Each structure stands twice: as C-alpha cells, then as structure tokens.
Length: 452
Image 1 (cartoon, rainbow, N blue to C red):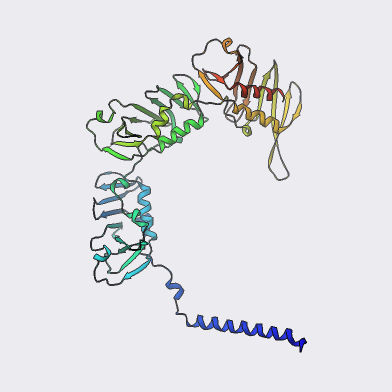
Image 2 (image 1 turned 120 degrees about the vertical axis):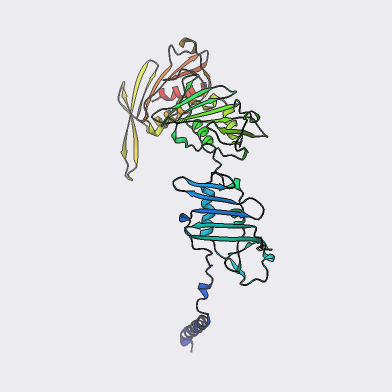
C-alpha cells in the first residue's frame, strides 16, 4: 500500500487542478461580453489641438476671454484686451480638452442642473476648429472633492471630470496673456550695457563665446556669472500690470529709469529694459523702452544688478577646463618648460591622455599629476581687482615668479604671477587689471608646476 502513496498524491493534485480550471471556466463563461471594455473611460471630445483656431473661456464671475491662433506668431488674446497670449498656457488647456475623459456619469437626464452648479456654469470652455466648436460646461465640485460636475451644452447628461482641472480651466485674462517682458534668448545676445547706481559698464561676447568687460575697464568676465545674469533677463516675467498704456512714466520711477539694461544682438538690433521704482517690497516697475505696458517684476534681476560690475568678473586666475588643455608652457625659476598631450584609446575604446615634457628635456609624466597642476590653475581665487595699477615693480611683475601659457581649443591663455611684500599678484593677457590673489593657492600652483 505504501508503494502506491506517491501515485495517490499525484492523483489528488491533478483532481484539485482540474476542479480549479472548471471553476475559472464557469466564472469566465458567465462574465458579460465587453465587461473589460466597459472599464475604458469615454473621451469627452474628438479634437486635434494642433488644428484648433480659437479658444474661449467664459467664467461665471469675470470677463470672458478669447484667444485666436495667429499663424506663424503663436496665440493672441483679442478679448478682453488685444495683447500677445501665453502659448504654453493655451496649449496646456487644449491638451486637457483633447485628452479629457469622463470619470463617472452622474445622471443621463437630470431633473435639475442647479444641484450640480450647471444651471449657471462656473466656467464655459470653447475650442473652435473650422466650423466645429467643442464646448465644455463646468459646474460645482463633487461633495467628496474628488471631481467636478460637467456637461456638454448639446446633451442633458451630467458627468464628472478630475478635480485638478478646475485650475486648468478657471483662468483670468492675466493668466493667459504673454508675461515675458523682453522675449529674448540669452544665446543671441552679443553685448550688454548696464547703467545704475552701482555704476555703468559694458560687456562684449567674442567669436568664441567668451565674455569680457570693455567699459570702464578692459577685463575678463566670468562666463557663468554673465550667463546667470542673461538667464535672469531671458526669464523675466511680469507679476502684474501697473499700466497698460501709461501717459506719464514719472509715478513709476521711470522718468528717468533707475537702471537700464541694453542688449545688442548679432543682427544689430538693440533692446533696452528700463527698471524704475519699487511699488512694494521686493517688487519693481519695469518696461521695454520701445513702449508697451509698465509691469511689476520680482526683485531677482535687480538683486543681481545691485551686486555691481565686480560680480560679473572672472574670479579665478584662469577659467581652464583641464580636459580641454592640449599643452602648456611654464617658465619657473628662469627655466622654460614645454608640455604636450597625446591621447590613445584603451582596450575599451576610451581616450586616455598621456603627458610628456618636451623641453628643455624629454620626459614622460604621470597624467594625474599634470591634471592636478592644471586643476590648480583654475583653483587660484582672485581676492580683488586693481583697475588703475601702478608700475609692474609695485606687484613683483617686473620679475615674475611664473609665466604660464595654456593652450586650448578657444586659444591660448597667458598669465604672469608676481610677489611683493608677501602678497601674490597676477596679470592676464588682454586684461588691463592687476589681480590680487589668494597667496596660499598661488604658492600651491607654483609648487605643482615646479614638480612637473
């Protein structure tokens, strides 16, 4: 009998599986056809947002808004005012209409629309495409707060849509107007002229994309600092409109303006931003000098400008990326040394740098040691700038302790270091200013180059 027990267990297991299969078949056979399909939500509209030509929003309390697509120029608001519209906001609303689905059907033929806030909808949204219009009426929130009551004007049925769409559709005119103040792209700017209580100065971008100060002193600018300022200008957006068609600029502190930022582009076109008084804490009046409204902007750009010209200067001895350096020359202790880089692919196909001293003698060098020295070049900090320097001897630059020329794809960078009374100074090629350096880091750089 014991020899038959394994066969008995197998038989019982097969019987259980057979019974389970029969049960599943029975349940599936009784399921109504299309049960899975019934779970799929119904689309409210069949529209292509790219083909929509106009968009209207009519709130229960407030002004009706109409936007029209100006072919080739984006969206324009035609009511309640004639101004450029925010294309991103318009596209966001249309995208919501295009993908809108019904969450639940509340009533096919409601006895009263008032209980859903749809007798007088909170907002009506209409998109027009050729001769076809798509209109959504939005009412009150579902008591549980999980949705909004809505319907189409051509059908009695009341349904619900997601609650978050309330903020998408309930827009005011200001929400949909174009709030960019200048409409500029930072990469297109070729020069900057800035005036203000901190002083007047001019910056110029060269053909390699590097920035320098040209007035009141010729000096290297910090690429990241200038890019940050340009980013603040590019992203400047109004928080409100103080006057759409001002008759007098004096009440806004714009006659004359407190500050101006003039941008010149490669095309020769110039744009000037005028910044005036402060209507509230951390707010400022501003306008495009070419005309248009006086707007209120946040203080971010003004805070940057208030730091003055020195905030935009290159505060490192040289902005050098070690991996971009092709070679360099260093004269220390009266001896000129020349270094060259070659690259070979390793077994994984990755370029590996190799460094060699080529003069006054030939010697292979440790790549990490050279990279460390180059990293120190960019690590020497400028503590202050001397824009009206005296003689070279006053800074030890009549007899430099280091002359360094670094070669990279954007051209050579040359610096000289001197010492006077225990203080380190430097001079950059093409820079009229003398730099007072962090002496400890300057000494580390000289030491590292001596060891190569």
